Each structure stands twice: as structure tokens, then as C-alpha cells.
Image (cartoon, rainbow, N blue to C red; front, side):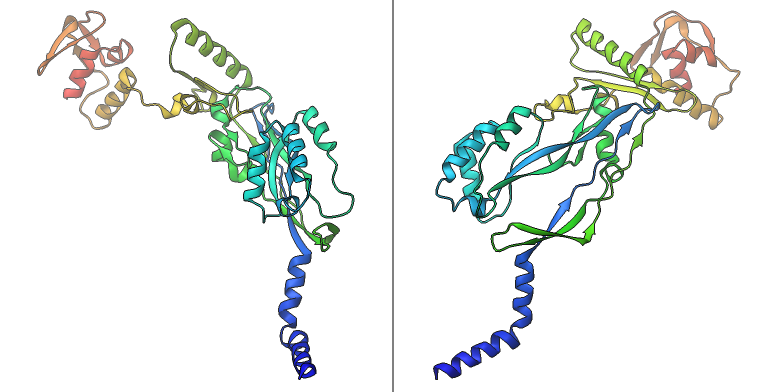
Length: 346
């Protein structure tokens, strides 16, 4: 009876379950690793770099293997001390993700002292991998807060947040590639199958209409205005009147896109395009344009501006100066409220 049962089981494994176990072996012995694409640069109209990407080391641990180690607490303490994190909190994170084979600890490390301490950590020469490094791209903005609201920034996962980084993310980010890794029974890489690799498609560069020199002067003037008037907000835009191209745009308060961890809520808003302001006298040409287009007024008409005082319904309107008769052009040039009121009444 024993031999019959054993024979039936062997037939089941070798014949009926062969495909399932073959797929399971392939799944356990191979892994697909993503190859990050380098984000494209952001340039000004003269080709000067406003945003760029460099390669930086990121550190990870393997919780599924680390939690099985008898001296895991000592290793976690050493890692936490090297990266400047709380050891108890890091230990709790690792325990929470105990079944996972990958967990980020610190990403895009630029401090050489931190890297030196992490490189000095001792991993078992025999046995599974407990931790390691991966190369990632670190976004850098050489000019600091310069044109921050126009550029935006990239979060810890490299996703564009705000400004050009977000609106042009599809073009800047590119597409990641992949490569297939062969693993041994301890999940260590033993072969990279180059024939199945898909190389990454790096991001494209974006050239803006911004002029670095003009932008610099605008930023300085805004800082002086904020300090002089102790203002809560300020904004400035410089346009090319012939083409409408934005040569400079700045907003206050601002932030440094190199560090998005300490940005106030107010600083996120680009006052130049996101704040709501009364149009005031800038709307007067719209009224005149509408009147001319529909024939309510003529270009050669004149309007009596009532010497600076005009009653319109229950309201009294005033001009900054007492004007008599003004041509339609002078109503706009001198920004006469009374003249515009009469145009509006038409």
C-alpha cells in the first residue's frame, strides 16, 4: 500500500503538477529589477541649467532576512546611528514589514560621512543579503530658490510636484527600464540575464522662455519690496510685449526646491498665477474694446468727466484729478473712473 501511494504521488508531481511547479521555481529564482530613467534637465532660454539630476546612493534593508538574524538589534542600531534615525522606530518599521524582501531606509544620500558609516557595516560573508545600496537620481536646483514656483520640485519618489516639474512630468521623467536577475535559494543575485533587459528611456530636456538675468533682478527686487513694506505676499511677472513670452516670474514667500521637507503652506502658492486679485483699472481696456467691437462707442468720441465728481445711481464716483472733456484715448491713458463709467453705461 505504501509503495502504491508513493508511486501515485510521484506521478502526480512529475506529470499533473509539473507545469505548476516549474512556474513556481521560475518565479522564486528570478526577479525583475527596475532601472530608473534619468529625468531631463530644465533650461532657460539661453540654455543655462535651472534643474538637473545627478546619481546618488540609496540604502535599503531586507526585512525578511534581517528579522531572522540573532544580532539584528545591533545591526539596526548601527544603521540608525549612521543615517541619523531613531533605532526603536527603525526596528518597528522593519518588524512591521517583516515578510517583505525590500525596505528603503534612507534615499539619495549626499552626506559623505553617512555613506562612509554605511559602507563600514559588516554583512555576513555567507548567508542571505541583509542590506545594500541602489543608485537613484537626485534632483538638484543649482540656483536654490531661484524661480522656485516656476520650476516646482520632485518628491522622494521622483514625481514632479508643482510648476514645470509637474505639468511637464511626462516629458521630463522618461520611462524606466528593467532587467531580469537570477537568484539562488538565499535570494542572492547569481546572474543578470542581459538578453532580457529593457534599457530605460531617459527624460527629455525642457527649455523655458525665462531669462536668467531678468529673473535674478526680479527676485532681488521682490526681496527688497518684502523687507521694505513688511509684506505678507508679493509677485512679479515680466513679459515680452511682442510675443507674450514669460521672461521672469517670481512669488513670495518662496522655498528652496532642493529641500521640500520644510515648506510652509503659504510658500507653496505661486501668487503670480494662483492668487485672486481685483483687476482694478487693468480691466478698463476690456470695456472699451467691447464697446468698440459692438458699436456702442466710436474711436473719435469724447466724454465729459464732470470735473472729478459723478453720481451713478446711489454711488459717487471720483477721479484722482479733476478732468473735463477727455477723448476716448485719454480716458484710458489717464484712467478716468468717470469716463469709464459713462462708457460702461453706454
